[in-house]
Amino acid sequence: MKLTKKRVLIGLTSAAIAAVAGYLIWEGIAHPPTDLTKLLPAFTTASAEIRDQAAKAVSAGKAKDYATAVEALGAIVNTGTLSEDQKQALIFTLTEIRRKVTEASRPDTDLLDRIDELTLALID
Image (tube, rainbow, N blue to C red; front, side, top):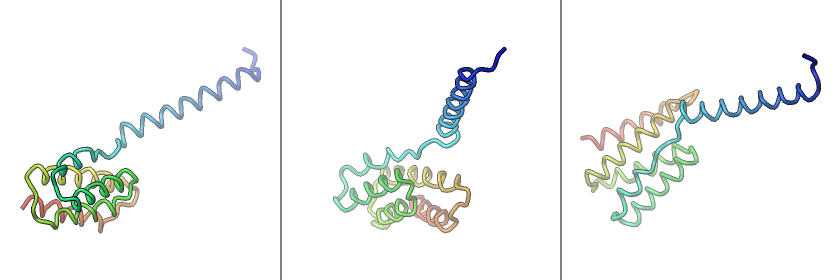
């Protein structure tokens, strides 16, 4: 088989496509996106201040700014007037954020401690 420029170009293009596809599959399976979709519906009837904090947490989580997301969730938890549905949505969201922080190459142990603290406050 004669090696031509066309075959080399096809081979390199195929390798590049396979690498990109592999990366996308890896990111989707091994590192699924943070699911914060359950948070906002639980707070539709809450005060405007709490809804704003929930929206801030979701925006920060989508931007992978987990410290800001946890700070906003902490403000909600500290209100102390939460329904069971709201507590469950907060626990789910904190668990999702904890999963993403833990996956980091150097997890922020202070942030993980704060997440655990908030989660325990919701369970008690």
